[in-house]
Length: 73
Image (cartoon, rainbow, N blue to C red; front, side):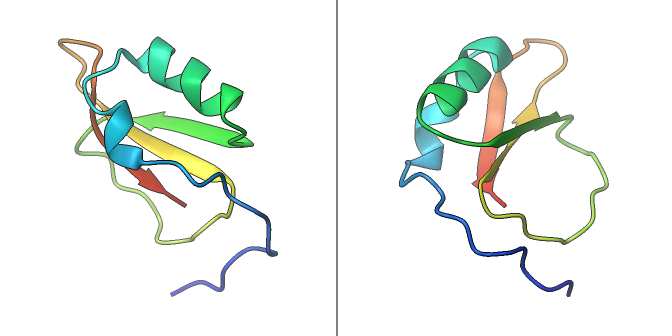
């Protein structure tokens, strides 16, 4: 596993509160709450296991445009 990025304060946010929102609304909320990086991905995307403090990830259903999963890092 890759080392964690330099320490940053991540917003204390409930990731489940983003599930069901449109990708646009979720990104707007995340930026308003202080997330420095917001990343939207398809649910089946292949990604690296690096952890980046301050980043919020969304898995977005292409057919509905809604967030189906959200996680930090």
